[in-house]
Image 1 (cartoon, rainbow, N blue to C red):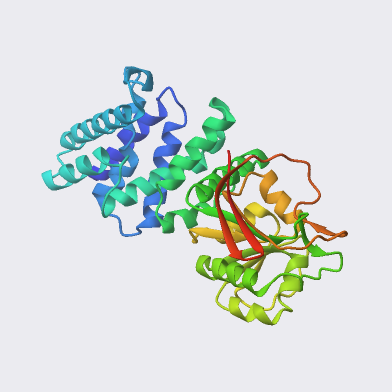
Image 2: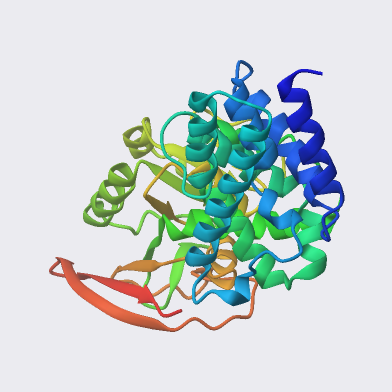
Length: 356
């Protein structure tokens, strides 16, 4: 056997004899993911992948409860693992350059950095998702969601794409993963519900007619959508909106239609999503997202607590019969008034923040 094989065997023995029986599998998975992320990884990076958590194979290691903060624990864990691996490499007469690189990689694998350090951190994070079921068995749903968020946000874009190849083999884990990713998306995104309404809260006549909405209001709405660069609507609103001559103003807007039906869209820039959350996933590269009904979609976004702000442009008309601003769900949402604005001498805009 060569020197690498001896080190590989020693890590195998240590991790297989660890109290936590997942240590060996995790070590091997991180090694495999490193080679997927960087097929030409050198010996130092491969050894670091195999031994980055080696301190956890020792019974007398320090544990999370021994430290005031999680960051302090992670730092000490990385330092101890680096020290143990350096001792192993010295035993097998590795050169100083390799030992120094392994030390640097393992000491920094929790925080990442440039080059191979970032590769190691990404592989470590991806491997966590391979063994998500074990983590879930030992933690609450909320703790699992928080851990998923933490590990996912550590990933670069290439590593995030690789997560899609992992089969969680559990509906619960799939749902927890989806919820965590949605929380990440929403944390970095402002979702605005923007609607023109009659004085009694209707968004259209019963036949979808909106001819009572003024040019002034349309210009305000169009400006908001074009500045955001994206828009979410329901299927009924999509078919109504795209027939309007003014819709040409949205030629560069990415538009997502929330619908359970599969139907032809009018542009490659238009997509269909089956739920409000999946619509937001399609728009995760945008800082601001505009939602503009109809009534069922508006209610769904609010009920699922996906909206940050609401703009209501009140037109000077009362409709005895029509489509309501919110329809189909029983919910309660508290608002804080941020601003009132006079769109014209006869039109008022109300700007609210959702109180969460």
